[in-house]
Length: 364
Ligand SMILES: Cc1cc2nc3c(=O)[nH]c(=O)nc-3n(C[C@H](O)[C@H](O)[C@H](O)COP(=O)(O)OP(=O)(O)OC[C@H]3O[C@@H](n4cnc5c(N)ncnc54)[C@H](O)[C@@H]3O)c2cc1C
Image (cartoon, rainbow, N blue to C red; front, side, top):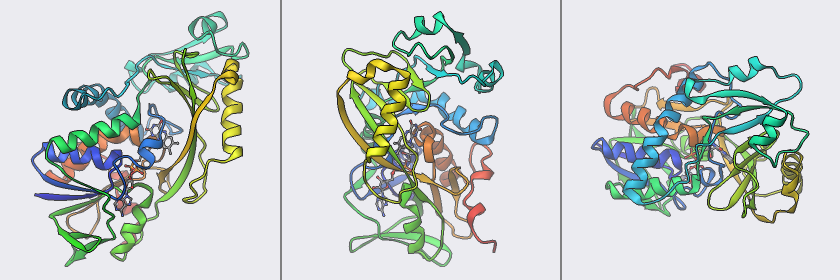
């Protein structure tokens, strides 16, 4: 079976890798370079960001989180790339209204190991935290990694398993004929396949429009800052109004805004000021650290904030995997498995009915 994937972000690359390992012939079309967009812009936290717990979405996140240690080992063995998987845990400063019960609600799974710490125990854990931070939830099982390296590792791995990696190639159209996805069109070339997977992130709507249908996926801009972090000030990830993620390679990432700003590729004075204000409030000594870089990216967002995963109803061989919004890095391994199950075996390995594209499409 030949599968054509449009989009070389984390979702397209991870799925190409799983499909090729399961025996499919795969061509991956990326108009820029692998991970050029949201997948490199992210912070790489493997924690649920702004999503409710005890839902199908949370179960999907847990399943993906559990796959990560093996994914990291496998990619490192295949490519030699260290993706800086840090497993130390995250500190969540508690507001005066939060209770121990709120902390327990964060414990999606026993491995997360949630604790509430107060007073001197907080300072002992992370001495750089402001003394104003008196009570925290410490989630030992929160992990994070370097997503730029991760997407690069996936891209190297897909090439190693025989995927045809067509970078610098924009797909202008998806060809649907006789209720079947037949091909994609790049500059001047029609490439035939047995299945087409749309994994074009915040640009997926444009591809859907190319075969005369509508799917509302919009960009949600996120701005980020990296401070030079040598010698390191923080050991743990800290997640308050902003999040602070220390990377072993010497940067402290501060993120992220969530904005409705279309595809305006700009880092703004207000965006950066608000992130720095929140970061310095949590860790006052950050005010002396140099700013290494700033950037922004476009998260793919659907109107209910949930991913869109699965076959397109009524068009054989057409599949979508997008709208991972704030959690696409966390959800990439499980998305890759689910999409591979769907494309090769006709059904996914877990019930994710509520993420089907059907929910946004007019009923036949
Ligand atoms: C600031 C920020 C912080 C984030 N932090 C986190 C985090 O800590 N943890 C987490 O889990 N998630 C995080 N996310 C979310 C995560 O980055 C996204 O959900 C995820 O990267 C989406 O991956 P994707 O492959 O769908 O999209 P993208 O990475 O955007 O990839 C889509 C690709 O498709 C290509 N493309 C588009 N149209 C075409 C076409 N017609 N032809 C060919 N190629 C095309 C684009 O060039 C692009 O490379 C963050 C996002 C941002 C912006």
